[in-house]
Structures are given as structure tokens and as C-alpha cells.
Length: 307
Ligand code: UTP
Image (cartoon, rainbow, N blue to C red):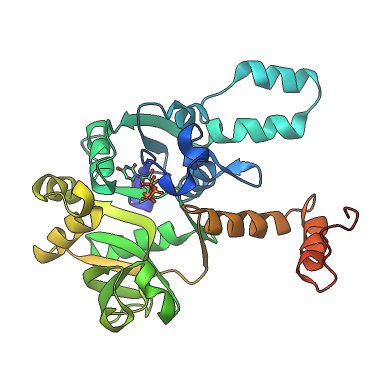
């Protein structure tokens, strides 16, 4: 598929952060490679990008996180060992990531923020690419397909398109929250963005629509990223560049995703995702369910023989 139908052909995945919420694991293991059951979060996100028509993945990585890109490179020794041993199901699994799409990497020398990470991707884009998709590997937005909806909105309304999830009121202060207005004649789940408030108190929240980690950004974002100054923590914020675009009249819309979402960026959210995915797997689901029910029941006894 080309960008004629999907609106983009490059998906940028920023993976150069420090992953401090996962220390000490992230001293040596990149957060993006932590497995959800058996598959790294970044592979799940790359598969989503490929399904939505991307043919190139640009991973923004940092010095010392080479394993993230290596995950997408063929390992011929491992593959031939698995083939010799007749382990064809495993062979298929290890071949999946390298076969999804072309992978390029760019290096963010220092973790200077998500906006700064995205800016690094500009150097590898082709001159005719008018938009890029950005997918945060921390965020699983399920079922896949929201990028397709976002592409349709860009085709119709132009500009940049973001993804929102409707969260319970009491959770708004954990998110970036959109200030939106209706678009005449559009689907009720497509709204124009007037602005965004980071982690507002409930009373100040302009809506219950929280940013999820999917962006379809017009190339104009790179120019905006050059013109903003560092915000909180000395970091270049992607939301500041988007706010600048809005202020200058660039159309920015959200698509409200009506599905589920997992935040893999912190241990609590990551564990929920792992349990959710494992329960769906035929080889682990039934036993895990049985154990969870026992673990949560009044009969739970940590000294009883293992079940
Ligand atoms: P996060 O803030 O969730 O990731 O950024 P983090 O900074 O690695 O994690 P904590 O907060 O220290 O626990 C969202 C995504 O943006 C990337 C991260 O790798 C993550 O995938 N990112 C963030 C960068 O690539 N560069 C940065 O400077 C910051």
C-alpha cells in the first residue's frame, strides 16, 4: 500500500527514553523490548503500523539501546538452528518482526523529550512524504485500525490528526486532555482540537478525552518543532509543537477510539496488558484463569501445594 491510500508511508516509533519507571530492569533491558507474554511491545506496534499501510518503520533509538533495532534484523543462525530442529512454529515467530516492514533507525543522543525524538526522523524522510505516523511503543490501542480512521480524517479535513480515548472523569488528571469542538457534518467521534491541557485537575479538565499514543502528523510539525522552546524538565514537547500549529491555523482533529488501550510504560499497566493477552492465548489462558480465580478467592492459601 502507498501513502495514496493510507496518507503516510513512514511510521516513527520513539524508543530513546530512559524508561525510569521500569528501573532496575531498564538498566540493561530497553523498556520497548519487555515482552507482552512473548512479544515485545515494539513488535506489536510495528505490526499495527504495517497493517495500516506503513512500509517503513523509523525507530528513534539512543546510544546503548541497539537491541531495539536488532529485534527487527534477521538472525540467520537462530533461524537455521530452529529449522534444523523442526521448530517451525518458533521459526515463524522469530521471522515475523524482520518481515513486517523496512526498518531504519535514527539516534537521539540525549533524552531531550518526545518532540526532540520525533524531530530526529526528519532526516530520513523522502522529499515527497507529506505526513508521518507516530506510534508510542508504550501504548497499545486495540483493536488495531485507529490509524486508518485517522488517515480518512486527514484525507477529508487535512492537517494533523491525533487519537483520543474517553477516560473516566476521576482519571483525567493522569493524562494530556483535549479541548475540543464539534465538526459540522462529521462523525461524532471526529472533533476539532482547540488545545490540550497536561494532567489537569478534574475541575480544570476541558473534556474526558485523553491523548493516546497515535499521531498522524503533517510534515509542518518539523518546522514547528524547530520553533518551540524546551518546556517542563528541559524537554522539547511534541504537544507544544502541535499547540503552535493550532495557534497558526493548521487544522488538528482527534479521532475518539472506542476500544481498549494498555499503557505499557509503567509496571502496573504492563502487568494488566500481559494478563489480558495471556488470558486470550490457548496455551496459557485456561490455567492462568484458574490460578487467578484461586488467587483471588477466599480459599487462597500461600502455603498450600502449588496448583
Ligand atoms: P515516556 O515518557 O513514556 O518514556 O515517553 P520514558 O521517558 O522512557 O519513560 P519514563 O517516564 O522515564 O519511565 C514515551 C515514548 O517516547 C520515547 C520513549 O522511549 C517512549 O517510547 N522518548 C521519550 C524518546 O524517544 N525520547 C525522549 O527524550 C523521551
